[in-house]
Length: 185
Image (cartoon, rainbow, N blue to C red; front, side, top):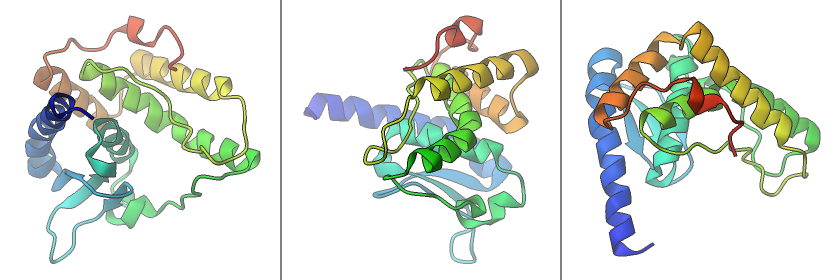
């Protein structure tokens, strides 16, 4: 990455954190945290009073994805590391991939909303580079259908608050139906 591209990237991540962390800390006792490794959600402890939404390697899109998971997690789940979910790593079989994609539809649809609120492009993530090859079109279509359902029926409360803050922080309009007309890449 060129120094200029890195500077732009860091400014975008800094802008994201500056936009969301004051709200997350004040309202929810949480923060987005740029991690050095894999993403994880860490609930508050005696030594760390904030819940941490840790995103991978400081990547902007990873932050949006992890924020989407946080927006969907209920109060009890937000008290558990990684919301108490089991994760099957890269290298999944077709059956394992289908199960993974089924639970990723809602978070990735929210991630699409969050990306639109920042004026950024969204791409689905199947997170299975070393696994069995499968057709990604049904997953992309399911994510699109869910994003459109959120448009029609409304976003979950925390997601709507995050989208509102992001549209303001990134000088973007509220996403409209046109954002979700075509399946994501």
